[in-house]
Image (cartoon, rainbow, N blue to C red; front, side, top):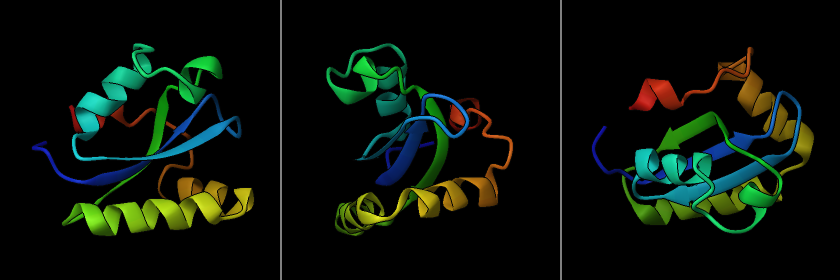
Length: 96
């Protein structure tokens, strides 16, 4: 996967703590989360499992989508994850 803007959701476990983020390099950013190189929320709450992501043509649309998702109710985020990843698999291996 080449560098491309993406929005992603990480989870601590199935139905656990969620984190929504945006990046221009999904592989690198998720690796950083998994290895606790990102100080803050994901490190403190052990949120390391990539459960959903969406690629975008440009950063502007990716940032807009991230902001929208962050405003969603938790139930909507869970539905988004379960629509394409009902088993809450870690999708990281699929993108590397």
